[in-house]
Image 1: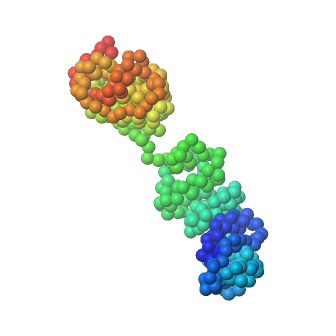
Image 2: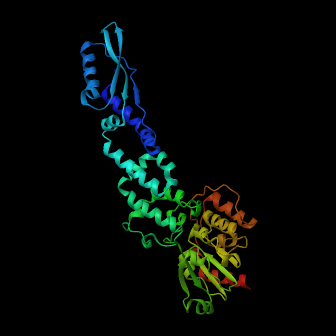
Length: 380
């Protein structure tokens, strides 16, 4: 025979659908739970089961479920009345049985204020009623945030700068639900290719930085008040325009700092796969680019990635001659890349040799005198 605990579990399974109907304003329909389990084989167990199921019934408690009975003849128990189905006849019966009176009342209130302010969210409410409940204490502030963005899409401010009367960390602590709602409320202004909250909704954020060294004193004087080593946010670098002839991109920090001075040129600290962050740079699109990375599989893979953004990229000191001259039998990090890379024939041969043997020659192991010598040959 079905037990009161099983009735509770089955009633709870129907709760999300009940909330969806509440949100949609659908008239309450009796909630039915079928009883398809047989009674126990002993009279003592049978009476204990009957007492259990009756104990939480509307007949005993004054609210809850109503039991419908059917008369059955059994070999062991004789003729007995067994429950055939359990019915919650009213919304009050159902909510009180589940002890959800206050929760549903708050849910109705929240649904009303959300729908009134943003009718667009009705479908979301009906699809995710549990999220409405989970955020019951936050809806007043969530709606303030949605209201601001609906009037000021893509505000280009830091989260802490937004003139919204909520706790300073409120938006940061509730990004998940606010993001779902902003996707609906300001759909036309959402950058759907971005997953990061700030980028997706037009906010400023702590950007990656680009570090630049002026290799020509005239450039430092003309554009940076004499500063020859500057670090700027990516977004500002992407807009940077300077009349220069060459840009060198170097992966190792020490090599970046010690890179020789060259007329009308600058050097960037690439920082590995961070090259992706500067792929929209107008300056890089219109300038000769020379990339110098470690002589290992990853170095060539970064070169390939960089060349996919800027086809004019040439490599520096990433050849067989340099490798054979300074290789010290160091092993690198195995590569799992199996796609065709954007490499020249010479680069591809060196890449395959290094990759197959898992060799590495780090930039800093190449003497400065050799770097200067090769740069001089390149410039000449």
